[in-house]
Image (cartoon, rainbow, N blue to C red):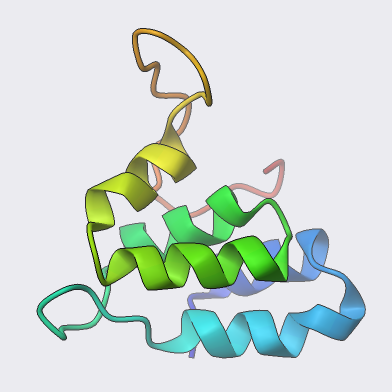
Length: 97
């Protein structure tokens, strides 16, 4: 079961028709060694998706390759050079996200 803050994020950002599939993808993603993704990684994948089921699937798969890329996608400003962290997803996603 996804984290409560992730469930609220999915309810706000995903189309009603995509919510159950998004929650299923976020329920138990794994990283490269087969262990479950941490809450920070689950939040990062959700936020990085921007409410797109296709992008969420991409980030869930990316966790299996290099989870650091998912953190960058979720926590850092896209395209900024140098990289600028704009959120800390080791903490629950706020209702303003």
